[in-house]
Length: 309
Image 1: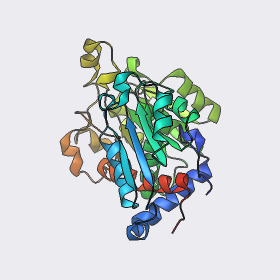
Image 2: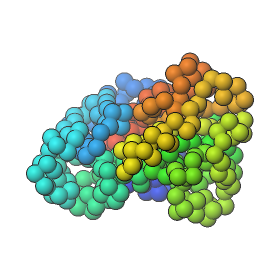
Image 3: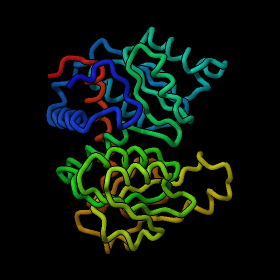
Image 4: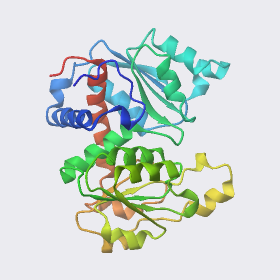
């Protein structure tokens, strides 16, 4: 797998074959984590987070530390020279003087791409506005693969904020590479999936439908991907309050769902999945979060080109 030195800005930067090899590496890490304890010894990861994150930042940092490497970076722009007006280009040029690889989250679409074009080290997109979040997609796909064995022929439900949800956009783009995938998109009209995402599905020849009714869609689904309504993407507080509780997944609603349904969520959740669902064996979102660390370990190994065990 020759990914050494490459950037990862969106899922399309990886072929289906490259993703499968990353999943294979992640499965080997899960099986024998001690074999990877010093694979990245002497390597340094820079985490550049211009907006808040817990899971993504922690999982990247944990991934590098578990591989024997080290981490530097900032978790908010106020603690960096960005607060003094430094440009993204200057930041990444400075960071490459110290680090071997960088991961960046930024609220503006396309910002990580701009940074990658100025960088001499690999740059990984950890989320740019409402655009892409490719490593969350790798996390989601690995979790589905471990449980379902593959992606062909699955019916995928996506619920909540499909307009601004970068995790949703990236996941749909990745799944259009597989055969017979069917999408059921569940959202209020104001938060429906953007037209460019619909066009991507049409061009792939896959089927999709849109609905406002979660309860009606549930019995059809193999995987349900819940998302929160993101307060930070709204300019109008009234619109956020009106829409935030539109879809709440409860134990009573799940009575009509398949027994082997997978419930996923990129987290954090607010109240779109009731706490009572956490004990349902179909709830996979905390296992999903742990899988994120493993697949990011595999990605760091590949982009750094360190010797595989």
